[in-house]
Image (cartoon, rainbow, N blue to C red):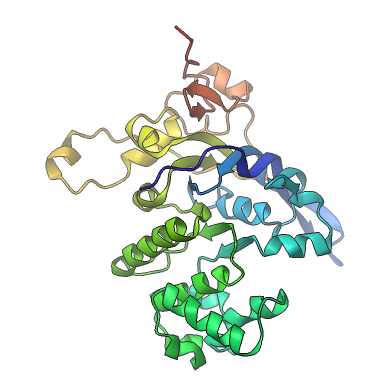
Length: 335
């Protein structure tokens, strides 16, 4: 895997928060609760890098990805894309930014309009942004289908005529139509058969290296994230609790939650499997409506101490390039 390109980040989130208000009664005017799906996140993604984002279902991964693109409206904080403040962009400014920021959705069946042919689905962003028309548009669509490994002859067919893997390739072709720099991949292989997942992952890696794309790759499967990512961020209950280069995080996880996630990954070697120590978490993830005081993980952490219950840990560098939000991990001191 090629190394990530350094320099200034292409995408940067600063204290990004996205909350959803729960309303009841007619006409839904009474606010009853606030869901803190994303709650003050700082992260950077370098140009050409793939940042993997993992965590349990409901922790806010997809909302974070959608918030970076402003598909979900952030409540507070900033998103900077190549130096431009996405959160402050006007409607026209955001439309121009859409050319450079795209998304591949989790459900290939739900993300494609069943009434549109493949040609219409891929051609729609070209039409909206005024990039090509007539024969030029049709040729661009044929080129995109070939790029993702599909026969250009399928352009006249409808989504229901394809398998899940083929439909996801169409979704990827649609995202590539406007030649973006940054793509949020929201669990793009979780709805596919295991035999097809590797093909789509290898396609995404090839396209990234060939087109110099930048990915936020959202997943709950740690083995999938390890295959494609340069760095990995771990989310829990709306916040990032650890972020590090891929190999370092898998070899030496610092946060107890990350260690618990990794200990649950099956190992194909029975001898190694028997030697592994499982870290079993008790209870369920707390509600994003009633976030625990102190460290959000303390209600399930087997190592929690009194400090964890009252003081919020800061996501800080514990090792060079390795940040974690945990009171029990000492900050590395210079020699």
